[in-house]
Image (cartoon, rainbow, N blue to C red; front, top):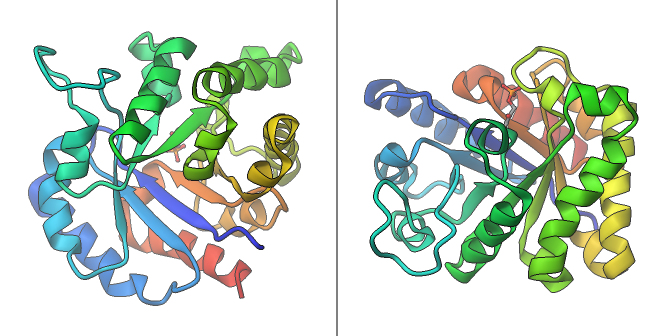
Length: 256
Ligand SMILES: O=C(CO)COP(=O)(O)O
């Protein structure tokens, strides 16, 4: 069975109440044009509840940008429990984004624990993997992807990938305007799928692998057209309704 394409918007630390209302209004109004794909938006945590209200009745789904690794709520000042994300309307949560890994010191082991906690709380993790420019230039891309993925596979098991999404986000392509070529994306995605297939070919074949890193309206179709690219995780371009909708339209075109 063909994998259904998914376009997810990661707003990162951007947004304000009025701007969010306008953005969500435009996205929900047009999202009906894309019945063949899944759309998820991931606003900053403080805005999830108001965005959920604005999305009510729409097929657009909600995700958090990170969660606390603790399985039970309690004395963890400043943290957000996965159950709370679920409570305010999230179905998904991003884990292991490279900004969390690089700027907030999230280790492979911590990312794996967050992945497990997300699923325990009934959320679908969107697990981000990706190499830095230095790693790519020293031919370490596959080693890094294999290590980041193995940390989660070893801890959570392959069955966990039945309800998880993977996102390949080369660090050098994030926010830089420098997108991976279709061939580079396809090669990395095929490698990730191959790693999953070593554990279970059927699950590997059904796991959606998104590409992230400077996806825009004008490059989305050529990226999403690759056999192992099942959609995108969009940063900057998810903050502009017209651009984000054009990316959704590119995904929709490919599923027809
Ligand atoms: O990090 C990303 C999505 O999680 C990608 O960000 P940009 O689309 O802004 O490059």
